[in-house]
Image 1 (tube, rainbow, N blue to C red):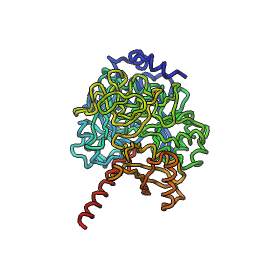
Image 2 (cartoon, one colour):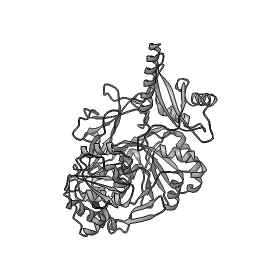
Image 3 (cartoon, rainbow, N blue to C red):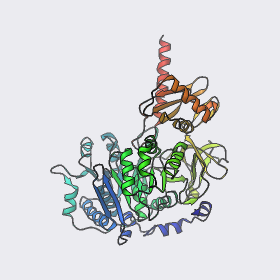
Image 4 (tube, rainbow, N blue to C red):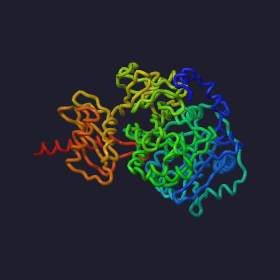
Length: 548
């Protein structure tokens, strides 16, 4: 295993890009990088399975032929380099063909998550000015209410509309890839903040170099691995690292087209021989809650496991090690950055329980105070990317919108972290999630992790509730495991459990038992919804008291 410190010290962007790309930063095409360059290798590109057990495999040769033909279909509909093509598709072979065909033309692929409703779809299509949207019969009806919807191509289309398969069959000839530069976009993503509509950002072709670096160093993807990223390609982690990253390296990816469940996850790992798994803490907590139902059939299958999307609870780390004998590592990133802070499977460095890890080589990650001064170890501040000394950082700002996260040479992530003496960084929480109680700053992640260690708790979310005496008091929302019932006694047990696991000031003074927690469609916890709910309750109570 390579040493992290040496890899970071000796990093050279141009040498890395030259080794990573088939083309060059002056002449580049994403379809060539993710498909054409691997034709003749004899390798598979896709392992696909659906909920009914149907399977299909595509080699790079087959994928190239299909992508070239569908690129001709899109070209016949007027799509040219720089145009946007949106995909409202589940994890199917047609999704992969659509993505690669778009790239082959030098066009920009825009993902639409299949759980989106018409309003979310309409906003993204209008912002992107997409020329074509490709969907399937299950999702087609969502486009009926989209005003000014672009041309639609549908898998199993309605009568009189363009059908995906018929278009392929009627367009036997492919087309040559259109070469662009490394600064030209190939993806158009949307990222949501705590306020305002989702903001668009363009991902340039040179980001492929960074995506490969993450797959190689943090994921430690190897030729002998069978890789499965649980994330949906309708979101950044799935599109960056279930599609672009592995395929550009010439490694097959796995698509499972069905709802996530303990049974389906265990079955795919076992039957597909998955050795390298990536996903989110939300998914892993559900697997842990199932106990031996999940661990028994997959024990001995997995070589490494990676986690992204939100901080990884220490209890999850311990469970995977104790029950499956496998190392699970925490990785941090954003749609705007890709993954930039990781505990690397492929690089040797110290790993501290609960730490987000070290900067991915090619990035300089720092901690800033409110005056934008870099902080030494032991002081919490804002995680930032030093853009002048991060050649792998590709984010240039939101498309046609101001980027308030830029402060001089820094990109401000909005996350509160703390630098450790050895150069690793520990996650504290989102800046607006950090709780100030009785003069102490408490990260909700620590309290949530302690709660999840209790056998009664499946999931937990912790927020600061306004309090006149303490500024905020800690309130926990808890989802109970099967076999446990909410009670005053259990509530007190959980309080004392946290007091014992953390500190006297960090326990939840209030606990509310709920059936589920608010999350984004990609599974990220939305603490701000719970926090706003508490503020509204308090305001209503104050109004009632005033009226009385």
